Length: 235
Image 1 (tube, one colour):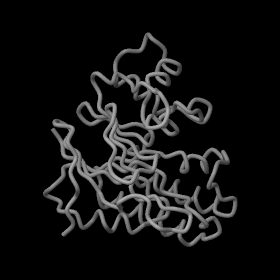
Image 2 (cartoon, rainbow, N blue to C red; image 1 turned 90 degrees about the vertical axis):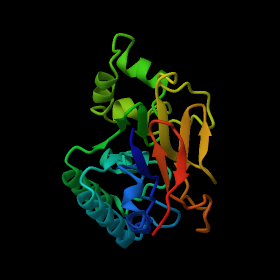
Image 3 (spheres, one colour; image 1 turned 135 degrees about the vertical axis):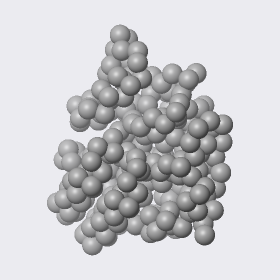
Image 4 (cartoon, one colour; image 1 turned 120 degrees about the horizontal axis):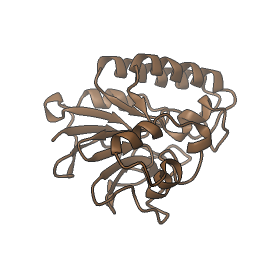
């Protein structure tokens, strides 16, 4: 059993890491960051906020040396030069340099999917469709499947059903081995934590285009044994 503090999509809000530092360290055992550190409404030419966010992420990753991190679609879009909504041509070099620095700091802790007990953590969710198409029916061990997924690149992952793009909240996707694994994701903005069909969605810091909050802007801790989540209390 582990109590996991979850940091969802940051999207150029470095103060979320400051907020996480205020959570009582006795209340959790592990930290998982769900990805999408970069890009936000109207910020494409603000290179300072890209650098500040990625520098703050690197410091947080260094200070919390067992924290686990997930790539988000916005993060890898710069590494793979794959344009999408929110991609900033002006910020590309700054984003790539900052994410590469983060990769060096984390030393292998930045992946597409992490597993703690029988809970899977990823940016968008590991779907049955994606695993069957990408890994085949012959691969059965979860460690082997995750190892293969975590080695994948743009060709395999730049698709709707992948763990950086899936939206099980809106589309009909069966989640991978949903009789065994519970999943925690960000990616899809929600106003409050959404626990449905074995998936807990926590993208709670997204905003409207005018900058006003869409979600409740709270952090949560998940108990990997009971699958219950509770609001993180700040000191």
